[in-house]
Length: 102
Image (cartoon, rainbow, N blue to C red; front, side, top):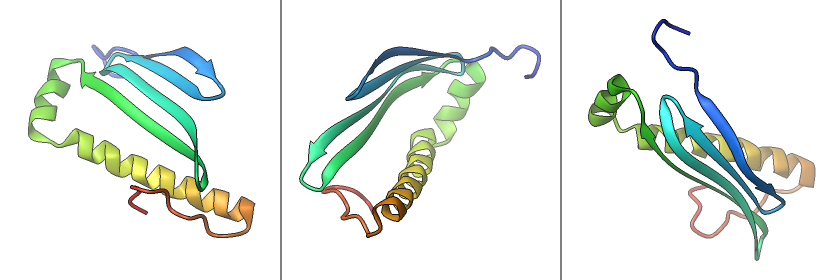
């Protein structure tokens, strides 16, 4: 941690078998939700995030860089790795969900 940086605060505000809600405070302020829902292929895992930059330097950076796109790209990688892991556990390729980019 550098001098002047805030430690991020992550609060688990809701947890049940269908949904996890996290609140962020610090560099990013807002909320993220993980939820599961049944679908024709089995189960759909959904991640939604709504955060805004906190410190001024990050707000300025967000004006010049597409941080949402970078985050989306990273999450796409995470979901791809999760799909591969589930395929190994299931022993067969999984069908992509409707609207997925895989």
